[in-house]
Image (cartoon, rainbow over all chains, first blue to last red; front, top):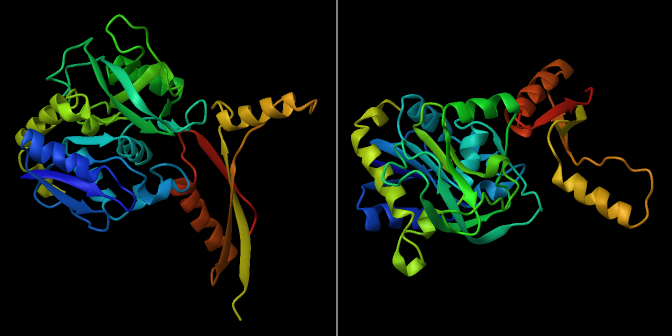
Length: 238
Length: 83
């Protein structure tokens, strides 16, 4: 059983994520190409960042109709842990595995810099090694991270405690919410209602070793790997 | 000879969704002295050429393609020109 790491044409953080999972956290991981239709012996799915299909049409739009997507949907529907980072978050929203949409940043710019996030919910399979209110620091690098949804869905997201990370600036615990990209309620990461799918815009894979300037991403990968370990063989259903 | 049919799918942001590109264009136009513009919204126009399908089949297919792919129903609506 290992974590399926999905590579689309244009994915460019798949190697970073492989390194973080395999070498930093010590989790079993195998690559799955977008043209495949099953996930192999899989207990977790990681959709990495990048520019799948060149971000043509909308970021993540073309990836949602790629051959591997039905298997990812079946795996998520069966309750398997799925983590989407940056473009992976965009893809999971487009595919309907997460609510809402990630629109162009408010100021229309590609923003690439370090950012702080406050942990809003530590009671998820992805954040149970962090604490509520903890500030984590990692790089963001995207042009479409402006989370948008209708008011009814937003109310459900809040009621279900699906908001996992909010941007804060400057990077300290008493900082007000920051909002680098115009995201609704400064949302930087959220889960589906069931809690087995997380999407986040900032990159834990770029904050997974001291030499990178932060290790705040490590507890997220460790928690995800632990969730995958206990998810057993549900992946074989996919 | 197969007849080629051309049509267009127009994808627009929902009225309820703020359009940062449209706002930027409108602000610049105002600064440059263009008067009377009260809103600008940017959408997408996607042209199709179809062959070997009836107008009905083509319309049904494009409706599915637009619904599943070309427009994101969370933020966008679409319209297909008559075939």
